[in-house]
Length: 166
Image 1 (cartoon, rainbow, N blue to C red):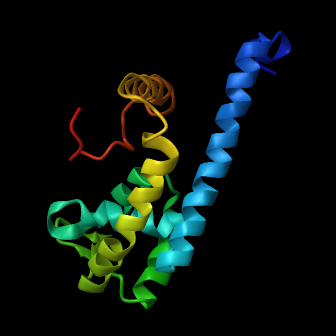
Image 2 (cartoon, rainbow, N blue to C red):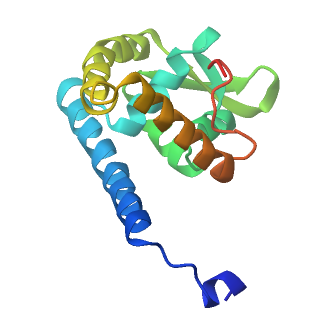
């Protein structure tokens, strides 16, 4: 046991409530978004996330190791999803031109069409569940809180897409 685990700083009632509310959001939000994507586009939340990451970058291609980082996934999990998406012709795998020992995922035209078909419903639900219930100040505070937590979880910002503004 680490010294901290032998004498833990227990959460106050308010902290516990905030933590349990966060757990509820972390479990309910992906399930709700996933159900909408499955129903409307035949994609899991993770499949959509993979395709949407590829859709946002020039050339629509990324080394699999980088795509795994961006989607907070293991390479093994990503590889299984890539196989499923390849079978549906939504992306293809090819050697990375910068290093032939590595592979990259390339979004196909059908994959881009799938993202474009799924995005409106997905964004509508994201707005309904996350953005619209908050005013501008609350949304800014939520972003700031996420950044503080991510500073601890991902200090190198390896999960942050390069193309996003700071």
